[in-house]
Image (cartoon, rainbow, N blue to C red; front, side, top):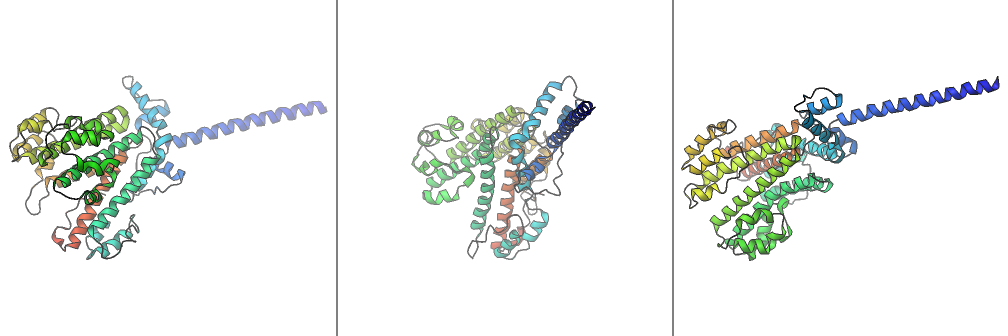
Length: 435
């Protein structure tokens, strides 16, 4: 009797133990299913760093490909293989990059909105501007600056804050994101090199020029640039040890550095840089490739339009001009060939009319009072493009988009500060709103 009772109890304990195991497995599966479906914003919060949710940032929590892959349904046979690859990429994206994507979305939540700009344009002095910025995400970033406040100080502190945020994300990143973020800095390096060479030609002290360089594009060899007299010397003595060395191969010559050659060097470097960045993003695939290729195509085409317009009335020949066009945009090849033949602004505008994305930009541009310039129209289109990057998830494009939006915000604040400082309020509203 006692033996039988012990056997029954032992059997019940075993069943209870098995029941607990099954229950724990079910709970674990539910938890994993929730984690893979949650947004990077939530993951950023779980990690515990500052990533506030944004009322207007209602991103899609699951992409269609990922949803169909998880549910085991949907993909047609023709796209099933590529869909599965993309689903796997998205499945593992949060392991290395979820925290940083949540973080950058939190940073994006601090970008100034129209109501903030409405307050800034009402400021009478730069001290008023400082007080209004203190009520935004910028906080007390100007608190330690002595009076009287200047526009240059505001500009420097804005750049410093942006660089601190970028460097924090860069330091936390792993491949391939760290290489992607390095690519973002290369454009600032190119601008810094051109600034230093141009300043040296005009006999400006190198110590003064260094302070005017963008901190996001700084590198160790910057202070030695003034010793170069030709592009070949510039490459062999300085740039060969920098990340820009592969882009400089087409710039090497024994011609003296003058203002025309410097502009040719700038545009040749940008051409090689954009094409290399485009190729890198294409290899990444997925949503990153989808957004970044579109963004870099626009940047390449914008440079082609601007190079053509700025070349009118200069010594630059049509053949030399065509060599400066990046070959990774929507204009390639027919549009670039037409731009190479253009002789005036109207012919450039005629080329843009064949492209639905660029036609409205030229139609609304002008230099008359009250008109928006072509540059402003390009900036507005770029802002719209980069804001839309945050409507998708599991991709690196949000890091590029955030830096571009932050750069535009800095331009807006500096513009307003200049108008306030010079008491030139008639054009104070000529900024590019973002959100």
